[in-house]
Image (cartoon, rainbow, N blue to C red):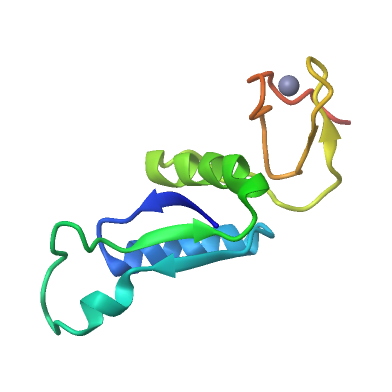
Length: 110
Ligand SMILES: [Zn+2]
């Protein structure tokens, strides 16, 4: 388990959780039960819901998705084959438009 995101509120945490799951990353919202005990309250410092990924090997991919999510960058189509990075050889999931390892841009595929 590895924490990849601290949400501003519960709804945002669940959006991120759904985003990661739809991209094949098993994610869980942690810390929301504490909030549920205080109906109607806003987030209290120290109890903000967090999103954790089960497989820490997927954390970097998860953080890239979250970065896109939080900056409003377009989320790439998650369908299609994996692609090898032309610069470092890392095999990348189809939803990434650039290499998370070295930053190289995905080559145009015809
Ligand atoms: Zn690379």
